[in-house]
Image (cartoon, rainbow, N blue to C red; front, side, top):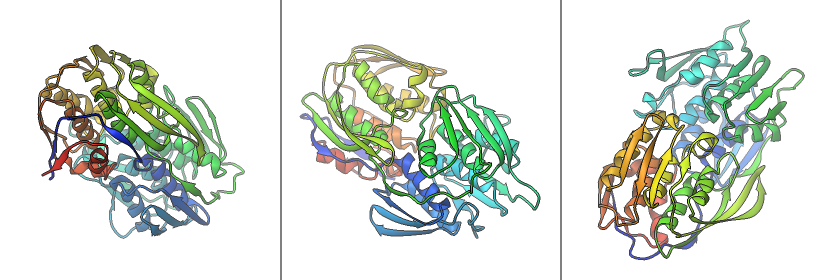
Amino acid sequence: MSTLVVHPASRGLEGSVPVPSDKSIGHRALIFAALADGTSRIAGFSRGEDNVSTANCFRALGVGIEDVSKTELKVTGAGLFGLRAPDHDLDCGNSGTTMRLLSGILCAQQFASRLVGDASLSGRPMMRIVGPLRARGGHLDGKPHPKKAGDVTAPLDIRALVNGEFLTELELDSQVASAQVKSAVLLSGLYAHGATYFREPTLSRDHTERMMLAMGVPLQTSGPVVSLDPSGWDGKLAPLDIEVPGDVSAAAFLLVAAQIIPGSKVSIRDVGVNPTRTGLLEISRDMGAGLRVEPQGDRAGEPLANLHAWHEPLRPGRIGGELVPRAIDEIPIACVLAARASGATVITDAEELRVKESDRLATMAGVLRAFGVECEETPDGMRIVGTDRPLTPADVESRGDHRIAMSAAVLALAASGPSKIRDADCIATSFPRFVGTLRALGARVDVE
C-alpha cells in the first residue's frame, strides 16, 4: 500500500486542469447503455476503479463493451430483457453505486446472481435497498450486519424470479435522501407490473431521472417525488450518445486546495454543475472562499461550467439541512475549509456519512485532530474550530476511503512540515491522477 508524503505549500497553487469525468453519471450511462436497444457511445468515460467495476459486471452479464479509446466506450445494449446469467460472482469492488443499482435490475431477472465487494463495501448496510426490492417481489438475501441488528451486508444473493412471478407496484417513503436507493427502486420499476412512487425527505442527485427521461422512460418528477408508470410503454430504451462531464466531487479537492493556500489561482475545466451536486460550491461561497462559476451550457442534459478558485480569508459556517444531501460526498473536504476558517463551523444532519466507505464523521474527526485542529464529533456531524496558523504535520490513515485520503492530502498543504497519508491506493477509486494533478498545480507530493 502506497503512502503519500505531502510537503507544505511553499507558494500558491496555479494552473488550469481537467478532472476525471463524473463517476455518478458514468455509472448510469453504462447501466442505461447496457439496457438500451442498439449501440451507445460513451465519451469521456472515467477509468476510476468504481466505473470499471460497473463495466466488468455488465460484461459478465453478456453486454458488449468495447474500448474505442482510453476515454471512449462503445456499448452494444442487450435490451431490457436481454441480460444473461453470469458464470461467476459479480465483483463490485469498492463501489456501493454498482452494487445497489445492479440489485434493482438483477432482482427482476429469471436467473440468479451474486454481488460481492471488497472489505469496505462488504461492511456497508444494504437493507435500505434490499427491503424495498423485497417489498415488490424480489428475492434478495445478504449477510447479517455485524453491528446493525436487522440489517444486511454483501455478499448479496439474488434468486431468480420463476415463471409466473413478477415485480409489483411500489410506493415508498424513503427515510433517507439517497440517490442510490432511489435509483435502485426506479431501475426495478422498469420491469414492474405496476407503477413506482418514490418520495425522499429532500431531493438527492437526479442523474438517473435525467437519463431516464432522455431515453424515453415514462417518468414524472416533482421535487423530491418521482413516479414511473410503465403501462403502455414499449419497454425500449433509446441508445445513448453522451460525453460525460467532469466530476464536481473530484473538482472539490482542487477548489479547496486553492481556497486555503495563499496566492493560489486554479481553474478547472468542463465540470458538471447539476444543482443536486453543487452543495460544496454554496458552502464555499457562504464561508467567503474565492470562487467563480463560468457557465458553459449543457452536456448530456447536465449543466456544465468552468470553475475558478483562489484564496480569501475564510469565515466559519453552518452546514446542515437540505444542503447536506447536495454535498454528501464533499463533507470531508468541507471540513478542510472549516479547519482554515477563523471560528467554529458546525455540521449537522450528516449521519449518512457514518455508512460510507468508512465512518467519515469519525475518520475525518481523527484526521483533523492529528493536524492539530480542534474538533468535537456529534452523532450527526461535528463542530470544528478553525485556525489560520500553520497546522501540525501529521501521519494519518485513510481507512481505505478515497475521499478521506484526498481531504487529508489537501489539509497537509497547510501544515508546517511534511505529512504522511497512508493507504493511499484507494484514491484510484475516483481520481487516479490526483497526485499528478496536484503536482501540475505546483504542490510537492512524494509517493512511497
